[in-house]
Image 1 (spheres, rainbow over the protein chains, first blue to last red):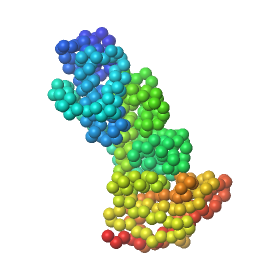
Image 2: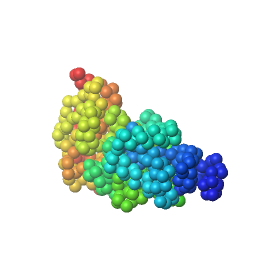
Image 3: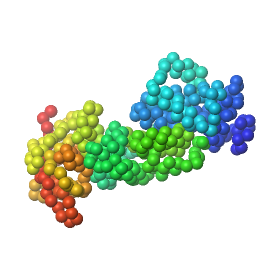
Image 4: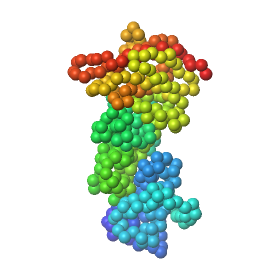
Amino acid sequence: MTERAALTGDATDLATEPDGVLARRIAAATPGIDREAEAELCRRLAPRVRVFVLREVRNRAAAADLAQEVVLMTLERVRAGKLRDPDALAGFVLALCRQVALGRQRSFARRERLLERYGHILAPAEAPAPAPDRTRLLGCLERLSERERAVVLLSFFDDRDAEEVGAELGVSPANVRVIRYRSIARLRECLGVEAPP
Amino acid sequence: MSAGATATHPGLARLLAWWFADGGEAEQAGIGEHVLGCTACSAVLDAVAALGEQVRGLSSAGAVQAVVSGGFVRRLAADGVRVREYRVAHNGSVECSVGAADQVLVARLEAPLAGVQRLDLVADDVQGRGAERWDDIPFDAARGEVVFTPRIDDVRRLPAQTSRVRLLARDAPGVERLVGEYVFRHSPLAGE
């Protein structure tokens, strides 16, 4: 679909359009509402924001909660035309994530207000990635070398960075990064997870 | 960016560095922004998060046999995991068991590790039967200990028996040096 077609709302399938095109459509519709574009933008932003926030808070329930707030705030600002460069939507969302998740500048009242106004646009929360099969994962962990297994356990147990893991295992941080990457890639392959893009 | 297509994906290594908060601030911000604009990469990280959660669950259940660190054991205990720990002096022995409520079993082997380049761990019974070898284990020479967690269910199934664990340094190819030998006198069930 061309950008023009997307902006004029001629087409019905927006799934392949860039985020910026969706943002422009939403802003251009104001004071009306382009429900199709809003739903598509929320659908694709929700899992990305959830993962981003999960990295900060390391708790799925809290991440889902905060991510919903970030997506709704994004939508509110896009509708209000507060997005200067729609093609830089990710940077805009990044700033919002920091404000909401990192600064914890949360307000229950604001959240309720946002949900009341925009909540109907949010699609049902997309399920997070399924947990790997326990038995299969155990088998895959056993195939790792001792160093790889130790690095995986220490890295994941409470999400320690390479410097901390290295200090505990007597391994340099650079080496931890290499071992961590190699072992997680091997685990993913052993579990039959698709290779990343 | 679109739902599925992005000009340049950072690749798993850089995504993992971001996930574990390694790397400079600019790199971190750049990857973070990419993740927020890329459905495919956020899905990769979602799967990494799910993998991490399952690995944590298995670690906390004592299901993974591994060499770990003292800090890791402290964090397990701080998380409320019931840890049964045996500290064994250099070339020492210990009476040991595992209780029904124990979740993780830990052995701390004190050893003179200064100057050791590579260390292997060999576990067998006192007659040398059923040897199991863990090659090139990680260790912190400064702390002078090796911390390992056997699979707790395997130990639960053991009859009364005496096992031996040896730490072998391999400072040169083909040359082994005994660093320490430890004896575990296991009885089947700790009094509850």
